[in-house]
Length: 61
Image (cartoon, rainbow, N blue to C red; front, side, top):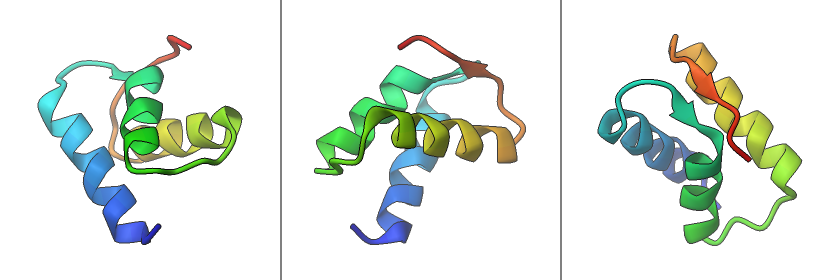
């Protein structure tokens, strides 16, 4: 999967969901793209992405 596609999917998630970013929703969005990495890796990716943009994170796995 190309990195910019992942970034675009996560940016869309943040834009359409104000407030704390749901880790579960982020993982679901990446899974919908066909990403098959372990949940713990995707949790880290989503959490880091949100934190770098100053967004709160909701750990709802």
